[in-house]
Image 1 (cartoon, one colour):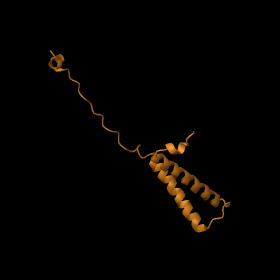
Image 2: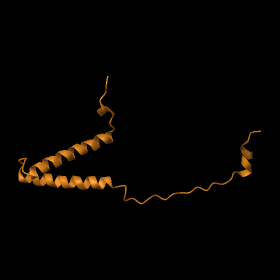
Image 3: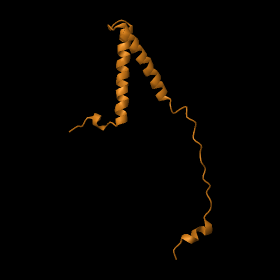
Image 4: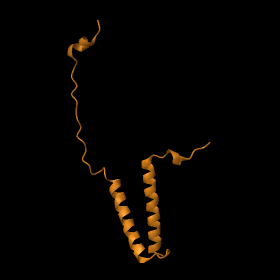
Length: 92
């Protein structure tokens, strides 16, 4: 039997795809209401537009959150030559 790919998603992937679907739905409803195709009350339109702006800002912040962190310092390890050429470790 062929299994569905939904069963193999990690919880983080489910959250990301849920956010994508909500973003698409919000932007579609908002754009349709702004151009007059969808009939939406003015108070709902204001809230939808605010939600759309917040979603755009949040996705931008999340996309670039790691690029503003300073680069970690690289630690160097000094390699020294072994004492007595490993004579202490040989079994006699």
